[in-house]
Image (tube, rainbow, N blue to C red; front, side):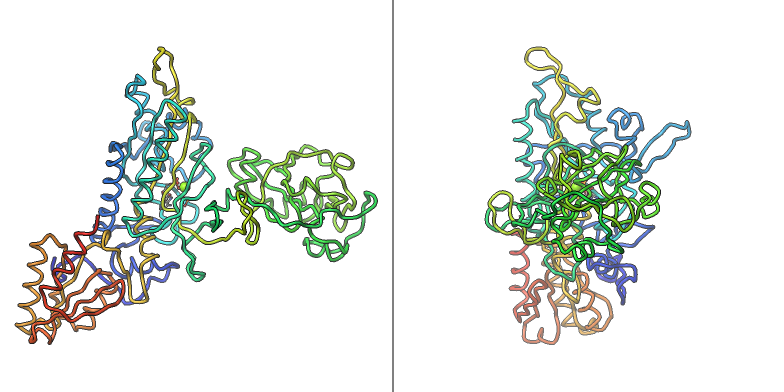
Length: 573
Ligand code: ATP
Ligand code: MG
């Protein structure tokens, strides 16, 4: 490809709306252009990268015996009603009507459609197990599309679905996918950690997310907190992580239950200071609006709630904290003074940390007042207890007791053991050895193709531009004649370029009549893994060979330069 003809326009500046490096660089280097919020044109360079990621995914999926198909992007409402998700999926599901007023949606994921495909196509246990996958655009009307391809509204996903006849079979299929995922991301130049996660709207009991860890404090592209143990390997998304706590004071030491004045003590610290007790003997109360109804959640004063866990514990789909106005309306008391005593008609869910509290402190549902010396079963009836606590740094591994560490992560893949969640609801069954109908036992497995490419940029760049891993680079090498009016330089560059092409290398030649500085800048920004420059040294039979990843520069012969690129390309697999 001649640079003069390549459809690419690099920009002098980073786009003003971009917050993270992959977004900034992919726009500036001419890979993507925004069409509308969260929706991007994948320009030719980007499309080459995406196709490479797709092909790695395809090769590894095919190697497991999974079979590729393609399902429609537009899906009928009826299937979503059968699964029960039409009502619960929320606003991310882009719903529309056809000309006959029939409800449709743009596919955010395809559990319903694949269950339909299996219901139509699989009759007997003899056809199982089977794993079907597709690579396709998805649409989710994300509340906050941002970070370019990392969180778009339209994005490309690989989604696979396994069908088994037993839990053991599902676990085998799951393990095969887990191994394939590690290989896929490694081949894309990404080290990942498989972490336990919440199953969210997809459902099922067991799931793991594949996280690209982002340790850099200044890089906020990692939207997830990952807790992990260096000793035993425990790793979990914060929405799912559990931990053991250090010992703490849990007896408030009050001799009786009574109401006391606590003027202007809105925060836990203020109550603790005022009463002269540690925060650990205060029971923090919070009102959530869960599926439009208020619920009270309780936790020890020094701990925080984890909203996903709260939602799971009460079986809610949508959850948010109540506004000050809602608190006033429900309790007649403001933030800081609400509590679980004498509540009417409001369900209570309490974290395990409050179960052990004795003679503790709660809000009195009256401004500027608290109850002290409260005990479960005496002053308050026992609520339902569950783990709804956010794990924090410094707490201990639930498996081995060592300290937990926390880091940020980008979720590039997610695998789920669904079980019969969809097959039962949608009556998707096969006939077993005894002639009995049984629902399929399903798993589902997603990879964000476009997010993976963007995550590779997050991991591989410097202040000058992208440093593509060679396996997913749009081209392997750029050949730069420094001066296109110098016959010798042009001849050598052309020879190298042709030789590279004849050896199956994906090469670009920068034939533009531009200053060397401009060509070098563009080559670094676009991120070609190698650059071969034909400059003044061609007189001595040498070219400059630059390795983008390390910045290393060598003066070598054209043949050596070609050989190095050929060798690197041959090692891609
Ligand atoms: P997130 O928690 O980041 O919103 P998710 O858990 O809802 O993602 P899944 O349903 O697990 O996403 O989808 C499978 C994969 O698709 C994800 O692991 C991710 O790589 C990718 N993906 C999901 N949402 C987006 C998005 N808005 N933009 C780009 N890729 C996405
Ligand atoms: Mg996920």
